[in-house]
Every structure is written in structure tokens, then in C-alpha cells.
Image (cartoon, rainbow, N blue to C red; front, side):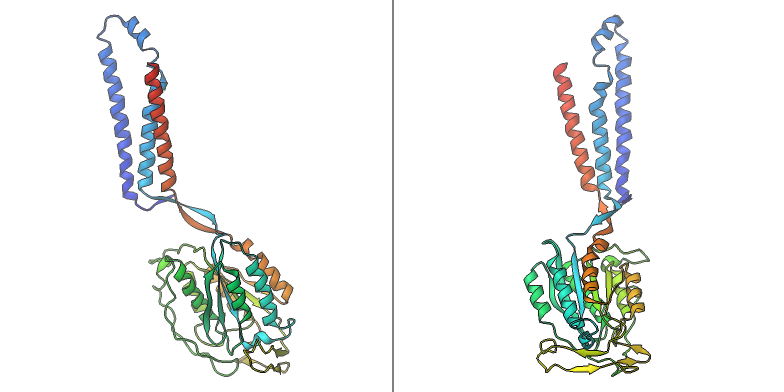
Length: 376
């Protein structure tokens, strides 16, 4: 147990002082009682009042004062707290590689179906936000419990060039910050530009400063409180440019925001083909990447999940990495996700509980005293 205002614990010193005064008064009364000559008569008259029951009211009052003193010091304990009414930010990769047909009908179609099932399965208290990212990341739907709005935005997504995983995490942090004042917005970084795999080298971006984070991140090396909000990141490739996943994960960790990355797709994407709607109205096309080095740059195939980077994000933020190679696997991962995130470690304030218990003891003490007075 820890205390937010430990100096107020000095109030507890009044309890032994009052107890001492009470004991002193009892002894004083005894000394006065011996002045009477008929001791037998005194014993007979005071037999009932001398029992332990007459001390119960003062004992209850002293206990209540002690609890009020503890409550004023803002006691807290670390406990596992359910987060069923939390907020989930779903960051969905809509890069061109999501047109790969190694997952039927293609990665994007399978992901939309799985995410649709996931959204429909949430309870009414859970808010879901949707971030979509390709060459840049944007908040498509702010956290809401309106399932129709989420599903409409999900069906309307179109693909783009490039994959900015780091930017997607930062956009998700900003969405959480809008809802939770204890979470600070992401630090400003250079906005990633639209890019496709293999067209340009990743542009360097500044590393977040050591003291950045604010909000629940704390300073001076203190561990941040775990936010009830989480980020579920679904991607099928690797970061192509902009802020790196590792840099973005540091910012999320500084704010106590956990990221749960999901790597989707096989390790052998041979063809990409999307529908007209998925291409945003452009004629659908098919591209073959079966050749050696297709879609790669500097030894990295950006059409295959960068598991090392995603596992690093999960480890840094306190989340967990999941892998799914087909539509059923992705559906199962999303269905099982609540089992991993429904409980968090948080500081629970006990002030109200101590105050309530003190009030109960005072009421009992008052009732006991009134009842004893009627008997006498």
C-alpha cells in the first residue's frame, strides 16, 4: 500500500492521544469512587456499567477516526483491474501488399471480414477506433461504440503505396489522448511521405527525447501507469519509411499504452490483385512477385511481415505479438484477444472505502451508545 499524501498520516497521532485521555478519565473516576464508605453498594450499583460493553462505543469511534486519517492520506494499492469497458484502437494496414492473394480472396478482404466479426463481437461499453495506414496514417473513425459507423468505414477503405507502421502507432496514441486526459499526445515527428516498397530508402526521423511522454508516462525513471486503452496493430509487411516502429513503441511505452501487433499473411506472396473498390475506383490489376527479390529493398522483403520489429513493439509496450497466416487464423486471433487484455495492473484508490467503513463504525457506535443509555 502507498499513500498519495503521506504527511496526513500524522492525523493518526490523535488516536492514541484520545485513547490516553479516555484511560486517564477512567482511572480518575476509580480514585474518586474509593471515597465512598459502602464499597459493597458501589460494586452492586456499578456491576453492569463496569463490563467491557461500555467501552465499545469509544473503541468504535477511535477506529473510525483512524480510518478517516488513513483515507485523508489517499491510500492506493496495486491490483488487477478488469478493462472490459476500455477503448481499443484498431490500426489496419491498407498498403498495396494487402492485395496479395496468398490469403483468399486477398489479404485485405480477409482482414476486413475478420475485423468486421471482431467489431460486431464487442460489448456496448467498449469503444473502438479505426486507424488506417499505408504511405501515411489517418484516424478513420474516432473511438466510438457506434458499430454501424465503424463497419461503414471498414468497408470503404482503399489501398495505398507504402507502409508506415510507426506513424500508425503515433496516430493511435493521439486518438487515445483525445479520450483519456492522462495520456499525452504523441511527440511531433516528421510526417511520413507516400512511398511504395522498393522505391526509396526510409527517411531518418528524430528519436523521441528521453524526457518526452508526459501524461501517465511520469518522469525521473518512474514506471508509467498502464492505460486501459490498447492498440491492436494489424499489418502484413514492414515499415518502409517515416518514424520506425521501435521509436513509436518507445512513445507508447512512456504513456503506458500497450500495443498488440498482429502479423498477417504468408512468407510467399506471389501475386497481388485487388478489386476496383479496394483500389479506390482505379481499374483492378494483378502483379506477380514470384521472382527473386520481388518487392524487396536492401535485403528486406516488404511484402512479408517483419516479425522481429513487431515483437520488439510488443515487448517494449507490454503487449503481445500474434501471427496469422490465413483468414481463419486471423479471426481466431482477434476473437482470443480479449483474453489477453481484459485485466491490467493499476493503482486503486482506497480513500472512499476507508471513509465508508469509518462512517459505518460511527453509526454502529452511536447506536450502541444510545441503546446502552436506554438500559441504564
